[in-house]
Amino acid sequence: MTSSILTRIVTIHRQWSYLRRWIGSSDLFNDSRIAWIICNDAPDDPCPTDLRAELSARHVTLLEPAFNLGRSEARNQGARLATSPWLEFIDGDDIPLPVDAAWLADVSPDRLLHYPHQTYALKNDKIEVAPVLEPPHPFFWDIGLIRRLPIIHCRPACLIFPATTFHATGGFDGRYDTCEDLHLLWKLDHTQIEVVNGPAAKQLYRIDHQPSCDAEVIGFYTQRLLRLGARQATNTRLIAAAADRQALRAVRALLTDYEAGEQPTPPHREDARRETRDLLWRARRLYLARARPTAMERMREATKLILGR
Image 1: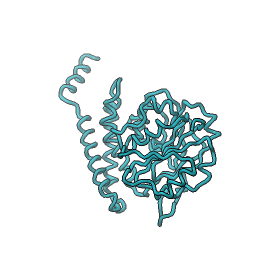
Image 2: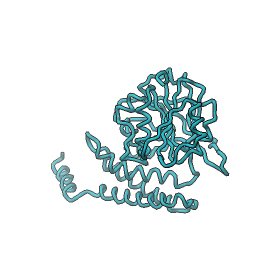
Image 3: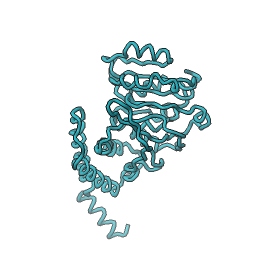
Image 4: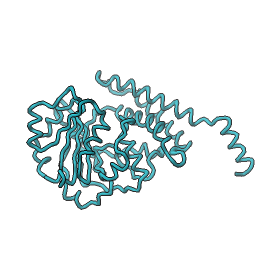
């Protein structure tokens, strides 16, 4: 593993069926400069015997923690074991694609690499790849959460991280699970790292083709990051009052779209649907509270106007 240029870290949580879809692809394992680490984050669901043999034949490192670490820490554990200058993270239901290691070797290992985003869905248990690459959503830039980095996808499905910078920023933070990807990007936004665009999609990200998908993701991000992440800022307030109001309008619009005429939610997603609706309302209340100035704040503003300051 010491000679590898890239380590591809896969976190599995009861998703062995997805691994079976791509573990037999020789194209993924024909370059010795690319190392693989798979972390099983469901100790009560061990790797099936036949897959274990396949992983061994592919020289894949299998990590089997004694208890559930959570996705963030599972990723970090794989990153700590890796010795390559580049790190990639693959969720258990993603489908990795071949990466051009020769191109990667020519890039300075102090850049963040942004790859085109391509998605897929399962139709009758068959992989249906989206015909076009999905553009990034500018929501977090529109509200001022990300300020320096260009508009890119936050998902690790689109990013390859320089190992040195990844470790220097502390990696993924388990306190932000479900939005740890954006939180890491927010931290990188406070560094001097630059972005280089990769040549082709490096993995397929699974989507359900439901209109609620973006509302769900943004709902989680909005509530957790704008409330918890913003107050970690060490300089001035990360989000200005005007950005707060703009974010409130966006959250309210998302909630309207989320509730109006969407496709029926599958039973296994009903809990997530209820939690998302609750998060959106809580985010709305948060922004309303922050957008309304207190009496003391109004007095300060009036004083400034009177004194011309």
